[in-house]
Image 1 (cartoon, rainbow, N blue to C red):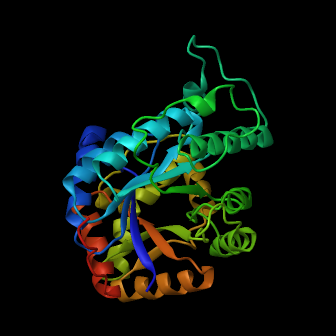
Image 2 (tube, rainbow, N blue to C red; image 1 turned 90 degrees about the vertical axis):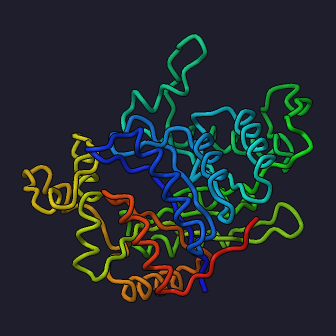
Length: 354
């Protein structure tokens, strides 16, 4: 059976706000701790009206302390926003407090939806603006930062061009290893990077043709080069899923998130609204154009048996070792219920306590 896991994006409800969304994440993680999902990862977003989690490393600690079974991790830490040294220190401390239960997923985006917010973390300490770079330069900088993070974790040599003396820095606590590192991405470039570094790869398939996920994971496995003895390719595909009592119910559960997606892409971001408002909403012409462009073919939507079949088909076609699911609903209880329906349909067993 394919391993199943959870990715929490911290959906914000209009009538509750981002503060409650953070508490909701801890509650949902606690409720799902015995449902059989292997991991509970949290995302990183900045300045996004419908997403509350801006500091996954903080929330990871809260969730790990509230649970006993699931592995808890970042899905992911957006490396352009952080120094590799600090990330290594943060996750070594988390690994110290919750040994054997922490994962470090890293991504090359900023987690922001506007240029000003996205550029803010890269400013110098004196507030100097980040230098303008092209796409390939951004990729090169990210790859160097990722290699530096792995080096601070004792897993690689420092990359060429690293600051003199970096190898002499004592990364505390230095008697605890860096937890497992996963690369997140949605492109062939990210797949090649994960393969070249011998890292597990989590590929986001939302708003994409499922065939792209199949091709991305094929490329990853084809190019995989072990960095250490025992390394082997491990592929995760990240999908959106809503499991209702039947398809109509599932479509209703998905409506608030899909409407929030349209608003975000149309430049008018807002928190999720209740199901009845989302279903009754009348799109403007520009919003309808955005909605019609969204590629929802990778979404898993339906009753328990239907989604279980969809999941098995996509996992089989892609060869994924694991499927990680995003289920953003208006009510947290609906999120829990959706995951529980799927767990029952596929026969998940609760992971052993750590």
